[in-house]
Amino acid sequence: MEKTPDIQYFTEKYLRRGVATYTEIKEFGEGYGTERGDLLVEALNTAGVRLIDDKDIICSPQTNVLMNDLRLVELISIALQLPVAPKIRRKLYKDVVQQRTFDIDLRRLDYLDSDNEWYYCSPSFNHLQQALRHLFDSGQIPFGKEWKNEKRRESHEYLRGLMAHPLFAERILPQIREHYLELREVRLLIGWIRATGKDAPVMVDIVQAGLRQDGADFVRRVLFSNQASTADSALRNRQDVCFSCPPERRCLPIQNVEDPYNVLAEYRYTDMDTLMVKRYPGLSFERCIACDMLIIKFFVPYSIVVTGKKFMTDIHCLRESTTLLHKNTGRYCPYHDEWPIDSGLK
Image (cartoon, rainbow, N blue to C red; front, side, top):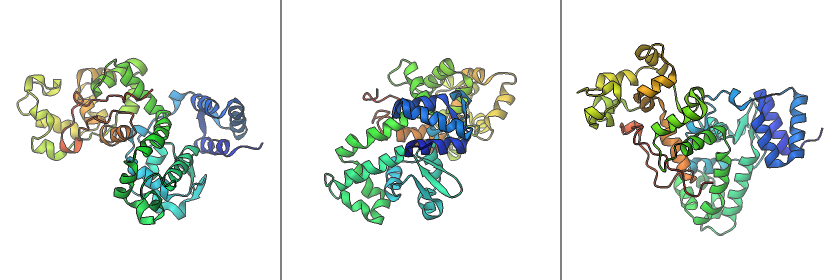
């Protein structure tokens, strides 16, 4: 059976993964047409790929797009450095996409797939590359054509200058945002934010809305890590935000505790499963969260509340005025961590 390049990409992706979800197939048909959707289903059946419910795809730190560590300027740099091609030999471009964890982040963003020999670029990523090249080459942005210089493609200062132009916000950001909003964890998070009914819900509100909407399993997979994150030095120096909170207003485990350091250190240096068993034997995750907001403070990871949140702000999913509470300086509190949806988001 002859397949279009788009169908070929998705067929190979799901074949490597071994499964595809009904939601993915439905969205493919809506995006590319019923006929192509039928061709994809036929190709997957022929290849022996199983179709499963969306809830059966396990969300992990390696796949959860909300844990994306890639800044917007880094995405633009990579898009300009890589050729516009459906697949690229890994050995030729390993240094480009494997800086830090960029290969993992591109996978989380559903822009990249790979095997031992090839990087497979999604149609969405290739469309982004083409749009960037067309905009910068058009002469409408001063110095835009200079991106072809290798050092310019890698210069974040230069790229930020191009990205500050209004045409970038008009033509490129909507494309990135539209793709991002289609990703499963993003859809869930936006749904939970809206379900709070608040203009600027805090993380505590969002977790509670998620528990009501989709249950503890989804909330834990999407928003929590088993490893704690906050600043060691801020705790040791008593500079963490919890120390400045009036004792009577503190979260239950440290309420009215004069020096909460030992309790906070216990959370910082214990994994979540061990902590819940020790402090709340027999209680479910949902019950633990309901009675102990320190679990949200420590176990919603930095990559969600800082780097991922910054990415959402930069592509106008969240308001430009959104505040980041940096865990690495001890500023994070789930009662103050606001997530206001941008007014332009549908």
